[in-house]
Image (tube, rainbow, N blue to C red; front, side, top):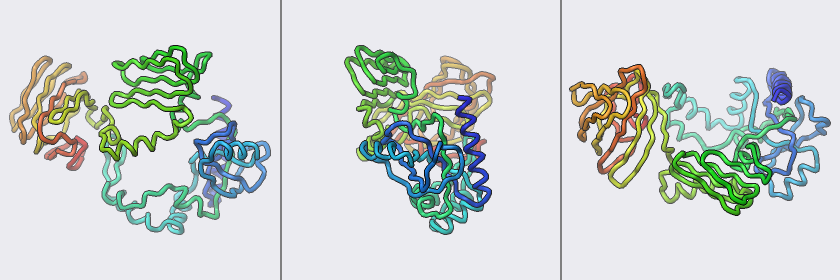
Length: 364
């Protein structure tokens, strides 16, 4: 790691000098295999020993097939496109004005109308949705004439696919990597991973397979096609699967919640509230709620009535009631929430007061 840190610092320093001179700088990784999961950068000059210095770029190359990747590795004048850039604010703004001026107004509006949320800044969704969906490579970098490439010749992975996770994970003598509650029997070159303590993943006689179990979905894929997860997510979105849009564990400024069970007219959640934190004062059009405290003490407001609810006690929130949940204690408060109603979406929230200055909608 120390050597990689030294090489990376040298690359950044070389890139910073070029950026100060008005160049758009990107970093390219010296390839050590014929990788089909990355785009490539073709250099306009011989990189020599790949010392960190600004080089001229000839062209961007899309992710190749296996034969194309082998040819580029053999040529010695190609780098993996790391997708990492370095430039001054003035230089990149000038580039967007020159090559993608249509992005300026919606992005500026999204910034001006945005607000802080959960320790970061959330862009306003409406103007942001009006901006063209295009990568910085296509919008600017592939069109700019002031681009420099700095080689990075040390171990690197963007962990962009489960095959990359397998490559970086500790493996046994047969190339098997396991993580979480997982068991491999007579397997080769396989990744078995469980992200849920309740789900044991067992592989028997597998070869070149990626199997990943999440709380709400399971992926099983040929390791050579592990980069195709995006297509799988698109297919789930097309069929309206909830797993494509949301994750069971959802972090909020006050803590987090986890969806445990989802039915047609009910949902069960585990809600964790940090000490001293409070949810917004809110109501719902389409659902009622039952809260059961399992750890700590909750301060609950329902239509102006305030009471403390301790472990093993419960409270009912009728449909339309104005309510709030707070944790007045010094330890986390955990409760089980059972929602019932005709619509259980997170956007069914009318917010009246909120210490985190959020607007209406899904960020409860």
